[in-house]
Image (cartoon, rainbow, N blue to C red; front, side, top):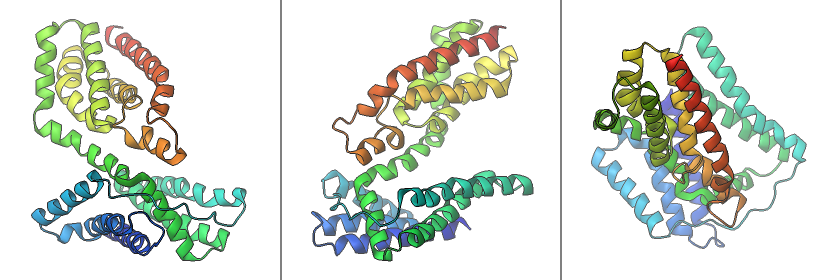
Length: 301
């Protein structure tokens, strides 16, 4: 079923590629259109491509963006329709995801797969609803969508790439390396020091990868499980949730968390690329201190 979702995403990107390449006012119509064309092929037919060809296409994506050939087109005219009515398609997406997740839990199906399918269905429903609310030609809606994609550019791919880093790091033995480094500096019976090391590693790795879910498997394998859970018999559910939450302290202050910290800058056309991060630094520090203290209480209490 997910193959159908990926195929639909591929078709949408191919549509954006055609609209971009035929836009006479676009500063880089061919190269930008080629970028979305390649990405559409990877999404729609990636499972049918050989590994070397898929890798070559990814390199081509990097080359096009690295050379500055992927640009945003002119801002399309505002679509008709009152702002209050346009909230309906916006709300349809989370509502559909929630409904799909609850259905999967009730039926005992895979929640992650159900959430993805709910996201795809919600996106389609939102598109059809927006089309109905605005009464705009479907081509204008396509131009609005591809302009949003142009504005984000390669940033739209970064969350997917970062999400895979956790598995790569875990397979490479980064967790064992972390455990060795911590034990080299901290005695295994010093609970407070181990909690601080666990939280610092989680926040730091989340900042490097830009993704708490990428950092968690590494930290859990290297520090949380062998050094905190097994020796002291602490509550695994509470410490796992807190360790994952500590990762937010890292993602709030890093440009690697593109979907949180760079995408809003691009969409709002802010002057400084660090505008969002500067605002979030005090929040990140407060979260880190509070979660560390709570975890120390659970481990030593």
